[in-house]
Image (cartoon, rainbow, N blue to C red; front, top):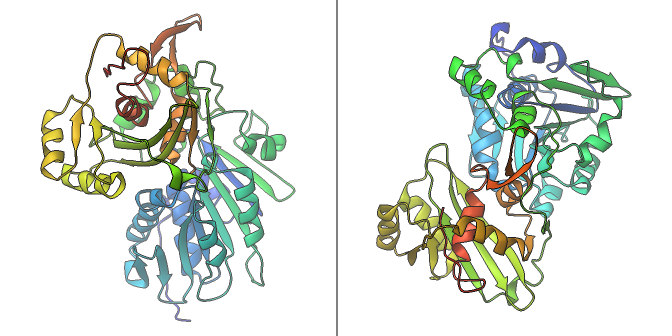
Length: 413
């Protein structure tokens, strides 16, 4: 093994992570809290340093693999760049592997939606010593337990399972499983090989004034509690309660009534596509596939959609006629959604009348159905007005279902 001497200024770390994370050896490590608190980047920093030291191999996972490249992989490559050690790593974005040239230790990436691949992942030198689950609230209890069992085999380094997330709902299994040791008046606790660190934007010294202002000016009580203050959320005014997540791959080949919808987006608002099968006789709607990405040009999004729709019609938000023309130019059979007064509320009521089954691969649909809410007044009374947030997939779904329901469904965004 080659040896190098790297000097890294402690100023590149947020102090709270330098103290409680960098050398933490607990078997189970929880890093949770508000948005923009630096959780993911600090874990990426630790990962790079551990691999450089030649003692650890990492497996980094999210619930769905296609979210890995734009999140965890990007964080790791940014950490490598910031430490100025890119020459010591081989980054293979196709195979989702990063190998340290000095010692053959690796950082491997995978999605829990491909369990067979997870079982077969093995580093080229030694065993997996660390598993980091990003956005752990997206994952099922059984999946995390299976990952825990992967931490086996002889190693000089202690095995660690690390979970990072925003605390979206207090009734989540993560709260029930790990937070019996938690004390609300503390930021860090550890007991019996479990540690929990809570952080917020105030712990991240690298935020800009605009970043801080956006978080502090959040007006929605739920979002302020969860994403600004980092507290466990309690949702009382969720719009959809008629859905569940289920793997229906065994019957998917029988589906023949597909509906496709697009909600346009580019920058902070994502481009969203949903593909659903409508079992009209049983009033069941199966969400089969999705696309959810920012910074996509129309040609790129059109090509992604074409791979999924088999020349079927795609109903698109009519707010961007140029984008619809582009889709037609790129040979997507795109049609503008019709709009009419009150159609948002009608579309919601129609979807509420169905049983909605979401395939595990549709993680963003699952996220939106968990958080899409009605507005509330100052007294906490629920108003019949949906909050225009966390609804990109849902809007696309309303467009896709245009024409269904009593008298036909006219869609308006």
